[in-house]
Amino acid sequence: MRSDDIDKEMEISCPYCGETFLIVDPPPNERPCTLDYDCEICCRPLELTVEADGSVVANTN
Image 1 (tube, rainbow, N blue to C red):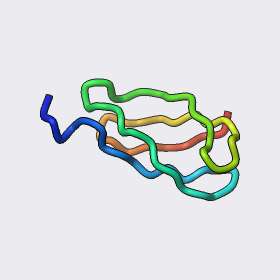
Image 2: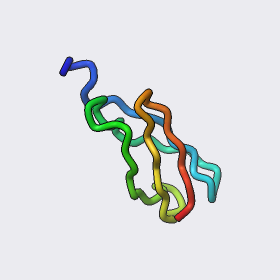
Image 3: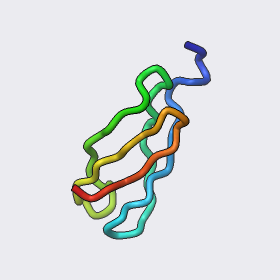
């Protein structure tokens, strides 16, 4: 794994409050994946789907 693939951040837009926040991008060898996460602004639960290409979709639980 290249060092530039580690600790990249991705911007998430919360479907509840509309605010954006950053999360650490999962490494390419761990994608696709689904992450349970809470919005860092409104604290509501989210399910983040990170695709193999690095795109992310935030869904309500």
